[in-house]
Length: 478
Image 1 (cartoon, rainbow, N blue to C red):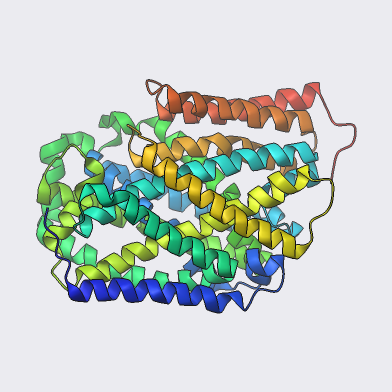
Image 2: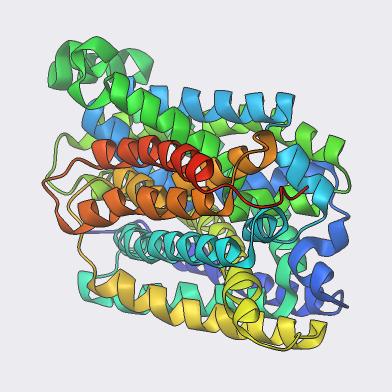
């Protein structure tokens, strides 16, 4: 397969990578303590908060899975983007969960469970959230590496090399500068990403025959099922309900997202961050979906649906432009990796390892352990990305693995914050019972990811209520 990559394109890419590493070196000088390393000293304001949150959530894997959903299902897939935006806006308007978490001045989501319940709940929450994060990241690397190898014209056997290069660069600058590196690079990458989005949208519309051509294409391939929820079997009421619960939990408890809340200068700014960012979350889903439908119009149906978008791009993007587009994609990819690596290494250190130690760890040692954790996670996701094979779409795999922790975490937070009778036993049972369906579904592929994920959200609150009523705590924590 040919590529439109040329000398100018490579110059763009190499310059971008060098600049990203330079930012990491610069940001290292800003680090004084753990709060600086993890939360930029809790001094983040609106613009930078929006830019870093949008960049993190507009990862390359996000672009791939949303485009794949629309490529495989048509315009009906846009319902996922509407739900994502609406749930974030509601949380930003009401302060649901995040207002209380930000007021506590904590560093990680699992830390709350030790304040409200007992240390063991913090530990199990940390383990499940950590597993969810690294399972997500592993598939990110595989899917994004395949995308980049096609778009840049590399043969398939070079995929491990591309994955390794991406990972080494991101691990390096995240380790050096922590959240300072993440925020500074995210702001820079956000601007590049926006420019790339505009260019891809323009060329996609032109080559697909505009919106009219896309509508015709979807009608030909999917008939009414491509437009109407009632005719789309994969987008029934169960899927909509599960997706709403999934995003509600994600926006209120997912560490890479909520870490922005913890980093904002105050509660009001954190809530404003969500309300404004919700607009971007709609376009984060819908624009890649338009590209996916454009790919359907340009190249038709192919077996490997994940590769449809890059195959279209190498046909429609002219030489000289492709390098800039790829910088936008690399920006999207790296801005997700840095946040995830930092967030889940923080959980590994703060909520899993530190509670097991009999002595306190000072700030410098915590930062050292977090940096080591970033390297360990990097090795794991590299080998998971190479060897794990999945049969579902990327979106449904990510949503399924997210269910490992999302239902239990949301239930524990809601129960702990809003229900005085919530007990430690109830919290344990909520986490354990909600993790079982997605674990089984990961290995028994006949079980629908939607059903497994939804079952998690049913079991978690039931377990919390029964466990709390049967085994109340002796003293309710404040």
